[in-house]
Every structure is written in structure tokens, then in C-alpha cells.
Image (cartoon, rainbow, N blue to C red):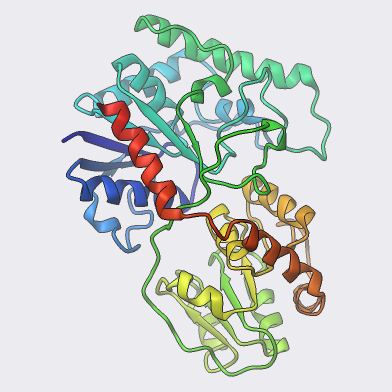
Length: 392
């Protein structure tokens, strides 16, 4: 059996681990030696099945960002050490040490792990919802379509990244890559749907759709209330959390909310009311069919699960990738969004609109019906087969 490392280098939150977990879990069940190499070793440790996979810290670069508002994926990489060959070589060498005995790498946002795998001659795969796999064009497409994105700036960023990467590859006798997107050519598995892909210019591609992610076991009873049921998954640090809870309570909509680490006083404030706040991971797949609306931060997995269940969503992004997913859903017509920088957001009006306008639910059901035949288990089996085929 093979030793397979599951790598995460860039980004935040638990979604990187839960994206890799179904594959890691299945590989372990098939007798392979699976290990997590994670930017945040504690991420998603409480998700069902995660504890069975050993985990270690991943090599990461921790210098200051060059641009807090990156225009494309090239500028994102510049913020994480890919601005010069020196830091890139340090990253690649650190990953080479971690992967010295590995037979394959399966990554979710770990460019340096792919580079190290290339120098070691072992296969690597990128499992992604699309944000971190730009099309293999020069330059990488702009992310902020609503802002000016001078081609010269985009191209300069990509060329600087390539100028940092290619000498390192050359030092190990590996051919240079021509574009940033080219790093993922032949390695990518897109766990998304065309409607949610933030690169609509990608063109025809192999979309696997989402797999069943790890989830909790809690199935709390729906609290008493009025009107549509709401399932919510929000972050404790979301700046609009107090106002959101106040809006749900004011509308008296029966709500089940997952919010890990919520302030005890805020939770106590709503205890016994129409909003039940849980810190224990819930059985999302069982509760979504019982609700009418979903409130979340537009993380890809949660958003896709809502639409596949035919539920419209109120999306509250906290970072760029989530904002771009929100835009795709709003344009599709299956939800509304509130940008993170909106002051005094009118959550009451947004929730009322979603409940009153049947068009949002109709579009969500259209999405669900379009992919009703999508077999998540078959998609997972296809990915497993592709990885094991590379091992063979």
C-alpha cells in the first residue's frame, strides 16, 4: 500500500480539511497510509472521521503581504512568499523533507507541495472548488471584475511568480512552467459546478461536484417560532453576528444555528427563543431538507449543499473567495448577499425578501433538479481511481 500525504498550505478556516477528508478517509479504508500536513493543525479536528487521520504542521511562509487587495491569483501568491526564488526554495525544500517517503500528494491550496512533488518525481493532485486553480492563461484572470484590472499589472504579478518558481524547479532538473495555471494542468479535480465556478472563462472542464464532507452528529429539535425555518452556519467573529441574531429573533423564525466558540453572553441572550445556537457540529445533510432558508458565509461546500437541497441562501461573505461565490449565486438568482463591509446591514429585509419571493426558491430547486442524478459517491470513486492509477 502507498503513503499518501494530504496537504494544505494557503488560506484559513476548516473547509480545506473537510474538502480533503473524504478522500483521505477512503484511502485509509483501502489500506493506504494517509497523513494530513496542515497549515492549521487543529482545523476541523472535531469533524467525524478526522481524528483517524494523523496530522502534522505544513511548511508555510509567514511574511507580510505585498498587496492586501490582490487582483488575481498571481498577486495572491506574491502575498505568500512566491515573490522571490529564496522563499520559494525554502518552502520547496521544507516540503521535500516532509514528502521524502511519500508516494503521492493530494492537496487543497498547496502550490509548494506540488512543486516539491515535481522535484521528487511523485504524482500530485489539486482538489479544489476552483478559486485556487486559475485557467492556464497569461495572465491569470482578474478576480475583482468590478474593479479596474490593468493587464500590465496582472501580467507583471504572474511573471514575478514564475521568475521565483522556475529557477527552483530548474535547480532540481525540472522543466519550467509557462503559466501559473499550468502548475495545475493534469493535476486538478474541480469539486464544483459551472454555476459556482468563479472563473466562468474557464470553458469546458471536468466538474466532479462536491463529495460528502465530514459533518457532525447533532440533530437538535427545531425551536418554536413563526414562518420559514432557517438553518445557519456562521463564524463567531462575524462582525454582524449580533445584528443577525437580533433579526432572526425579531422575525421569530425557527432557527438552528451552528456557531463554534460563540460568546457565552450572546448565546445566553437568545437562549429559549426562536434561535437555537449550537457549538456542536450538526448533521447538515439531515437538517437541510427540513429547513426553508440557509444563512452562511458563502463557503463553497455549505453553499453547494444548500442549493443541492433546493434551499435559497442568504450569503454573508467574510473574504474574497466567499464574496465571489456569493456573486455567482446572486447572479444565478438563488439567493441574496450582504458584503462584509456593509454597515448596519438590513438582515430583516433580506430574510423577508427570501421568504416572500418564490423566485429564489425556484432557482434553488432548479439547481437541485439539474444535479439530482449526481452521485457523490461515484465522483469520489472516480477521484480515488485516478489517484490509485497514478500510483500504479
